[in-house]
Image 1 (tube, one colour):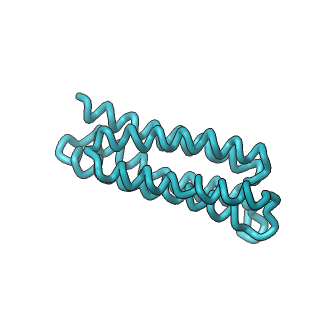
Image 2: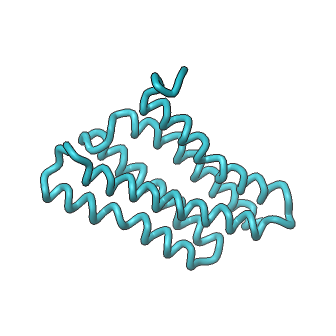
Length: 152
């Protein structure tokens, strides 16, 4: 399929799949190489913080996009909610690796719930909720593996 005919949904799937590779690579490095656990756990936490912040930015962008159908009150609410993932990510960066991974994992799950709800309400394209589910499963699954390694 040429890039000219590729839909936004298909682009989102390809880019989303590429975007979870650092989660998987960091978790595998934690499992496979004892000497890289500390570096790989920092990688997993750092990348998780970046992506959680990015997802907050997606919400911000959707709230201010031209042609959005939400009213001013809804827009204000979405803008306020959109900064929470970045604050949670920043707090996670200040913690030790295990609590960081817990915090980020819960942040991803909460945002998944909110994004799926927002998709049903028309804030995001319908395909976005379907995209977010498998990507969140991979991200949170990688963090869970990381937690298992840290707990051994």
